[in-house]
Length: 69
Image (cartoon, rainbow, N blue to C red; front, side, top):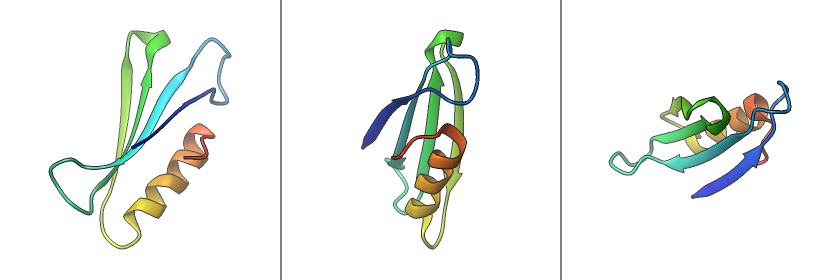
């Protein structure tokens, strides 16, 4: 599992913990999870399925959260 703390292009007080990982119960499904602990644990989830799911999930995390996961 890859975990990185990033500061997105939003107010500096917001910090996200972003995770890119394969779903624990469904092989081939990749998840991008971002939790904003500065906003009471608000979470965002994106799910990728099919060909190149891992690559697409990592590209999305990089684009959305400026994280090189």
